Length: 159
Image 1 (cartoon, helix red, strand yellow):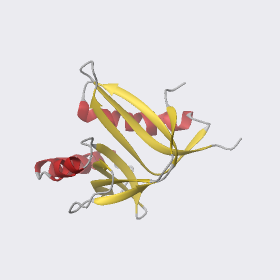
Image 2: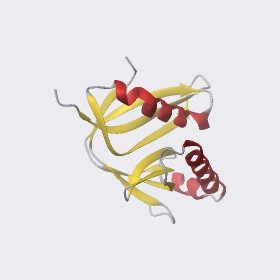
Image 3: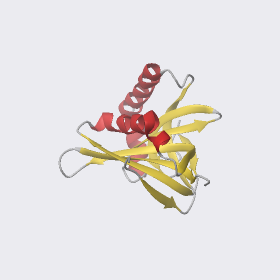
């Protein structure tokens, strides 16, 4: 049995982020390159730091369906008016929470994402992922490694 928990979020919430549209969801290498380039751009130009300073300082990797297309970006919890950023709606409800640990802070969000979409969702039969998005955070753990969680909105399966 894979390790996950269910957490209930009582109210809709928003996330603000900078990201890229992924035209071909199956182009893993191309999408990873586009995403990495966007993260480098918003790190170098200070926009991500500006956003995190307005929020609680915790960065998230966000996957979302925006105007019918896959979107991936980086941002913060909450609604903020920052140039070039988009505000995304996350809905109240049950969320699958999938944890992970690792030594590489930058790789951990992608590792958790790969675990979830590479098989874990198929193994979970009592809940179904319904979106419209998910978010992953990574922070330093006390043992010198990193700890992360992916949150995905889900509905209890019938039967």
